[in-house]
Image 1 (cartoon, helix red, strand yellow):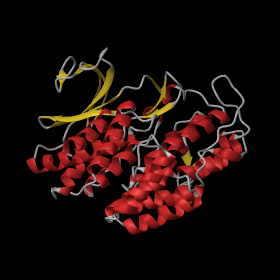
Image 2: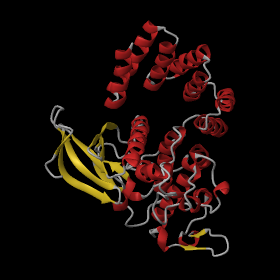
Image 3: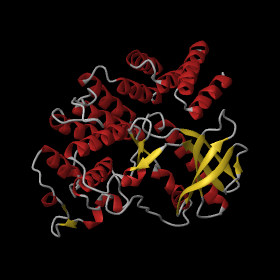
Image 4: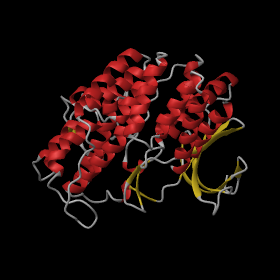
Length: 411
């Protein structure tokens, strides 16, 4: 692959990694000024059966759309392109310059540094989970500390790894229950192929234990009766932070925090009195002002939406908005549910309010454009898709900018 030009554009420079599902390469985009670096993921189907390939291609496109949406977050790599060549799939993503956290976990961290790690990861995961996605493979190697600002970036979304197996299962050729994850960091239910939002919280908790103790997760003992990880005796501390971590890694998923916002809320009291920043500057890191209950209702609404219970989703979003009238994303998602129920007027009203609260939400303009298109309000649809395109372009999200451009061309 070295030196190969993919899709007439992406020049492969060197390998970055290899797994059972394909390889990852560092490449250059030869059609952009200064030929910036990017990451190309080459994914191999596990079968060349035409029926399997057809299903795998459909799933690949669906997963790519999810990755494009996730890339709107500043701490998740942007998706630049996806394409197929022959029977192979390719993803092109933003290259994050920095080193993964395994390089930092060679000795125990301070409690304040561990607290910051948990908080930053929860803020990223709250966004990921709100999109109906469970990451499933949190570990130090999948988290990069970005050189330019020191922020953590979550890379290598593992959901796409299941494309080939799921395609085979859908065709009835075999039954597949694939557990994506890494031993030691993987929650018990995830190892059974039943991941939940709390599975990601468990993985961050295990990483926090590793940072505090200097021990790899596989080095830690378990209580043979309860399955709980035995680790607190390794830390000469007794404070709220340890209690938070203990709840994050409970064996039974129902005994953990319900969502990322709940973890942030639990940390707030501890974080107000600790030093933060590379220079030890004194300060406070406050959680986003969305209440725990409103966030939980929002996530419940998302789950109902993805299961096509649109009326149930609207009820949950209603309650979330009652608790937090400035919850822009709840208005947007309630608008999506109303759109599914053909309540066009209600959907537009929700999108209008979401845009008032967050004028730079490209997704909301795009969604409102879809409604205006469906009710033949062409001039309004053009304005919305144009604004969505411009915002996506400004954010560097070329894939979704192109999607908005295509919608404009259809009008």
